[in-house]
Image (cartoon, rainbow, N blue to C red; front, side):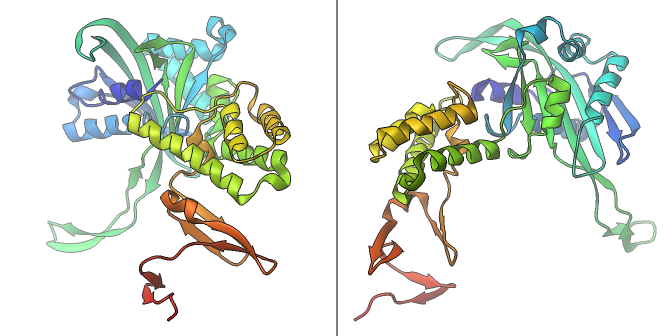
Length: 377
């Protein structure tokens, strides 16, 4: 799925736009026991309550593609005949109305899910979308495709803090008993994927609130597919490939050039508003290395390392490889944080046999918020 397709579905999560008729779910305690079920018609709920449920489900389609939103890809064998795909397809086909199927799904999820919060709420909703035809000039007219799908999200339930509250009967303020509050979802998914604005039964879209915690135990149990690398694992693998392949050639200047090159691509992609996720091949990173003077043998070693760590022909997300909003240098004694736009100003020099990091100083300088002079008369 691309960003336009995700945004198109997100716009449906309003009471007046969706075809969601009921909200299903269950409340699970710290002993992994279901202590209550939810099976409520959306149309009879107070509007504010309906919007809150839809808002939680909508969160399972939020965040950045490739970081918070991960493509789950089923094999042809799984789609043809597998327990996990049969269950998901059956839930979709019955529009979540089969309580036995819902119970099977709940048990599978509860049996594997690991959350820091001990209590949580599982929510499910089914929608049928009459997809309007979109012409080349981006105008839309009548529907020619029906997209049937369901969304699941898992929301931690947290204890509220005791607060003072007004009791009208006593005309006094007293401490209120803390209530349990449903927090935004930690994880969720959409099935099937909405690719080319139509159903793709070979894919699902998985959501994780924290890119470095993909809840791979859930991916394995519910989808039974090879868990993807998290954003943190991708960055660690990329940095490892660079340092192992380049060795002493992995200088500050080389790392600086790679950071600037990847950041430039990220900014250009945002400016162009391309809905497709930005990717870069190891070969393109290799070209960046060659441009800043890294030898051919080192570049080849880097490509080999990437093949081992990411697989052959991998498409990497630059946003997962660097932090484009941060340029930070750390030594044992100090940390230097630079505006990424100005990272080119940092220089490494050897003076009297010692290594220094230098930044040109212009304009005002503050030390702990206190203006100081840096120039000598």
